[in-house]
Amino acid sequence: MPVYHNGVLVNDPKAPYVGVYGGDEDTRRKPAYHNGTAWTWVFPSFCEAWADGFGPGEYETAMAWLASSSRLINDGCVGHVPEILDGDAPHHRRGCDAQAWGVSELLRVWIKIEGMMSEARSQKPEVRSQESGVRKQKTNSKKIINNSQNPNDK
Image 1: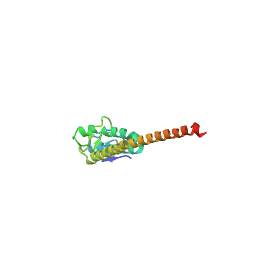
Image 2: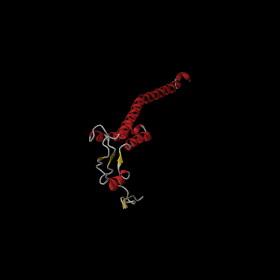
Image 3: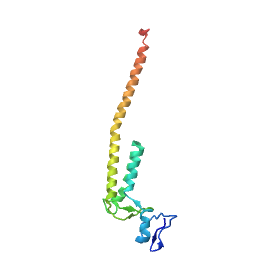
């Protein structure tokens, strides 16, 4: 959809992507805000969906992606996550330097996936004990087979 400001077309409706959030507020930043800018609060939700959708075998992948956000926390306004980033590499920090919903979503998903990983680790010994139980059953069934072949049974 074409966007006009003071009668001047400020976007290209056939190619709306604007990968760098900068320049004049009305003619450059506003069109970029929803057409190329990367919102930091969305990324943790992607990691959460990956972990939820693909299960325990992918928890470490989701957590590794989430951990890549440490660059945002350690640079700029230390301990915080910016509101937005440029859509184009190198993804410079833009907007508010300390966005509450960005950092809170990162923390919420970090805690959730850590819990999922912890729960998966705690269930592994049960699987092992089930496996050893299966081995025990196989051993017992062999004894039964061997006992039925006892010469005294004939």
